[in-house]
Length: 313
Image 1 (spheres, rainbow, N blue to C red):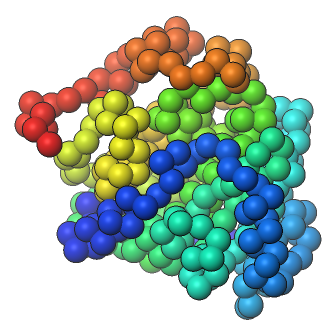
Image 2 (cartoon, rainbow, N blue to C red):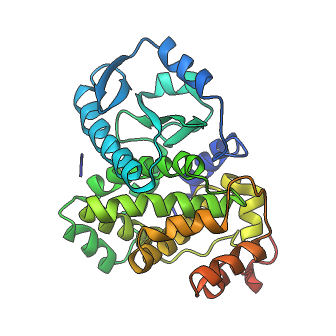
């Protein structure tokens, strides 16, 4: 597999697109409808551990991503003793618009019960790639050197993020089918990131380091307009592309550090302490419960306290 803060005009365009996102990205959606739409496109398909549907010219990428995604599914199946009927659709922009309202090239997943289908761009381009590339001349020399040290060009590093975000999407249906509740949007994103990092850290440590580095790049010298968990719950992706990236990078950073401390067992603790069906919970309840599980969450949550200079939005 080939190995946000952006130019203002790009951000304005992307933020406008993000407003059209579904208000509840992580929620279950009608998997059969999604699959019917994919099948109606008459794409090619192949079995690469999982079934991959792909646009013309996507044979090599279908094999690449299909095999790694299948490895991730096997990893979670072995670890959690639950199975997921998972497919992948690799689409170009003209097909993307027929399937989803998401901006082109934002990886996402449609799932219900134990069935899921993930959507990723066939080509490593689109919103995520453009936003990462917009940082190229703005990050510190030290961070740029870290990127160079990965052995990837900055362009390859940016393209890699498109694929890695796709692996994050596996975490949403797996957390659901395993029995972890969905008490808040930010909690769901944190959990999906934990699943992603568990797989990468165990099976692809070089990619785990790249994922770690991406959080540093996104968080570098950025002062968000929206920073509270309450804003994330209310606005979600409508906070804007760069601000949404700031939130996700903070969730990712916490998940990454916690996995290195607690390992895979913390996923089982999440199920025990946040059972599916419990419903929505206040941020205070969620954070206090997490802090009892892994002391330090209350201190971490201070990141999301409103700052005086940001009180007027």
